[in-house]
Image (tube, rainbow, N blue to C red; front, side, top):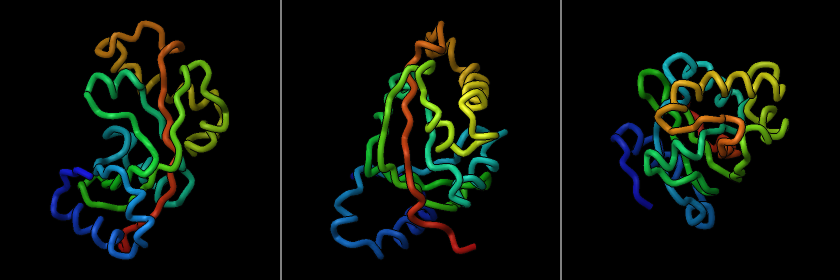
Length: 160
C-alpha cells in the first residue's frame, strides 16, 4: 500500500487506522488525499460528504487513463480535504461501476446526493463539470464516454 501523504494527512489516517480490526486493515487497498471537485464546488461537496448525503462520485474513465491513475476499486480510502487542505473525513470505496454517460442509472444520481437528486440534474451538472476537459481528453461525444462511479461510506470524521 503506497501513499504520499503530508504529515497532517498521515496523522489523520493513523488516528483512524489505529482503531481498525486486523480484517479491516487488510481490506485497505490504496490511500489518497485531496479536495473534492474544483474550487467552485469543493465546499459544497465536502458538506454533502460530512452529513452523509453524498455516497457516490463519478469521473471520466478517459481522465484516469490520461493521468495514469488507476480506476478506483473497493478498499480505497480517500482523505477528503477542505479548502485549506485540512483533513475532514475519510471515505472508503465499497463498490465501483462503469457506464457510458448516456446510460448512467438514476440510482447513481440519487447516491451522488446533489441538487434535486434527479438523473436530469446529474447529467446537466456533470456535463458542465466535464466540459472543460473534453478537448484535452479527446472526447467528441460525451454521451458515449465511459464514466466510472465509486460508491463509498464515510468511515472517519474530524472532531472539529
